[in-house]
Image (cartoon, rainbow, N blue to C red; front, side):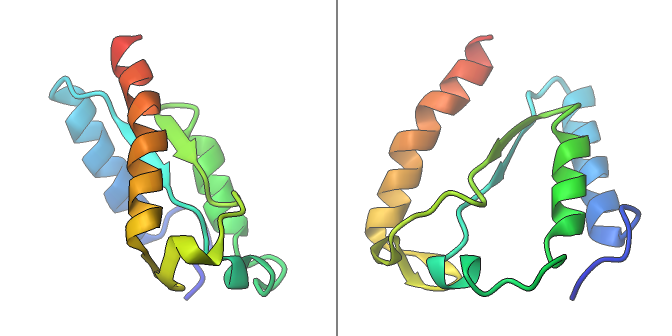
Length: 105
């Protein structure tokens, strides 16, 4: 599945949820986790263009932690879609301080 433009249902839903959280007084922090190393080397050209476009637009309005292209070890994943215990610990230990910084600013 590849969205055709920034008006696809997933994007609209994300914008609605983030907007409602913001209206309710919440600080919105969007997070895109790292992609499995096997995917980084095999993603066809243009596949992530809509994601990159959405990320660029959403990061103008909300905090956006983008680790999509960070090169993590295969040991941080149990399979291409799930993090291992080590990967989950790494996310928590590295993301926690970033979230704290956003909440304190």
